[in-house]
Amino acid sequence: MSRTIAIMGVCAPERRTYAERTAVALARPLHLLRHSDLRAAHALPLPRPRADDENAVVDLGTDVDLIHAIAARGGHEVEAVCVVDARHMIGDLLDDAPLVASARPGDTRGDVGARARQGALALELATRIVWVNWDQVPTSALAVQMALASHLNPGAVVRLSRDPLSDLASGGSNQGEILERAGWVHALNEEHDPYMRDNRVMTLRYDQVRPFHPGRLSAALDRLDNGAAGRLVRSAGFCRLATRLGILARWEHVGSAMWIEPIGADDGRMGLGQEIAFTGLDLSAPRLAHILDGAALTDAEFAAGPSAWASFPDPLPAWPAVESSIPDATD
Image (tube, rainbow, N blue to C red; front, side, top):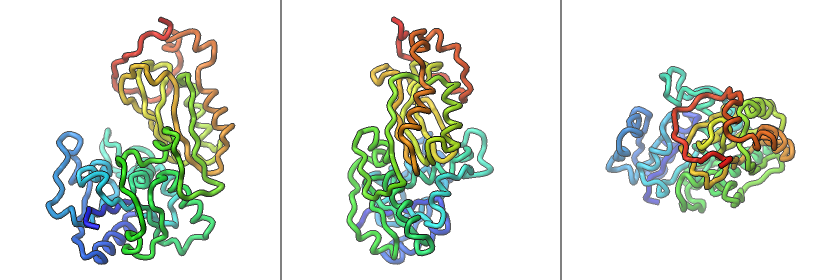
């Protein structure tokens, strides 16, 4: 294995120790990558990795931009290992703390739930997911954790770690783009087939042809957060709000944190409705669908058309201006 090995995870001590052990076991250099090394990545071309990165073990710091860091080192060619501390994996995915408590306004690392978002992303980008401290956790809890990780990333090798050499020796595949590894992408493509399963863990696909009423959606999100359909851990996909017609939005949620952010003007070919995948524990598909369907436009509201939709109460955070490209639905 000559490609770069990137070590990820939001539990910094466990990640660092695993990266050090991997470097020693493989007799490779260990590089530390921190946020300051990538902070200009969005404004400039991807930074050039160090000349000897190709044969290195790279410890990706807790608040590093994981997508840019992996892309800069070869994308799907990188062996991306997510280190999970079995003592608090699910707690990490429900954590509403920011990644950086002192982040400046506009820095998403300071968002509520940013730490959980980073934890979910590390799982979704990984080629391998390894558990440390697993001997301190009951077998039933480990089964749930491994199934949950497999639902979040169906193609990843999942393994209780004994040592880095054996972790890396197990068969795996690096095929496909890194952003296509996530379970929610598989679910929306109707190809979700997790390697590990548990009766408590479920991934559901939700489709609705009508846009959401933002006021009722806000109330629905509160109900879901309170466990009305089970313990939602992760959901992601695409959605539309009736008051913001013509804008396709990205739906992203981890734990108790929620982001609905505009992707751009929608030309209408994807319809007016929703496509979202939900993963969680003890989920009820009927209750989830009932709650979300209640947030979609009614027959009367839909028939009233966009001019009426524009007057609906909209308590959701404002978006930056995005030009709409959808014609009036009543035309």
